[in-house]
Image (tube, rainbow, N blue to C red; front, side):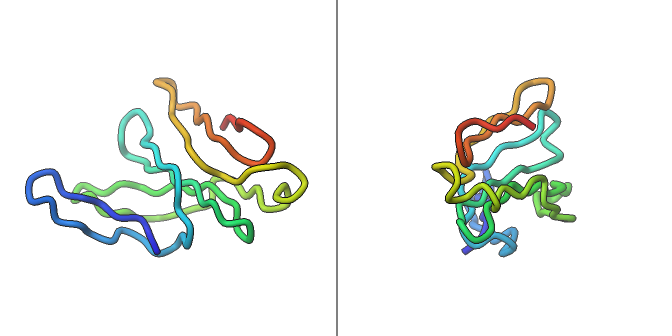
Length: 100
């Protein structure tokens, strides 16, 4: 389990992080310096943010939001997402669409 990267030129696959056991939706910030990852795990229903390093690796993973307490009360788990040009994150999660 984890988040992987495929290099453009070599097509080499690299494991970037194992912090998430059930990663699902991913999106980049408008400047591509932050990678957002949704985790579809009912025991840890979270969205995380990682700094993208020059070499494409990830650093300083932090929980952006933890929706675990909503699991079971509302249908759904963190899943797909997109980021608007102004940096707002639109993500599906328990109960519908979440906006960060």
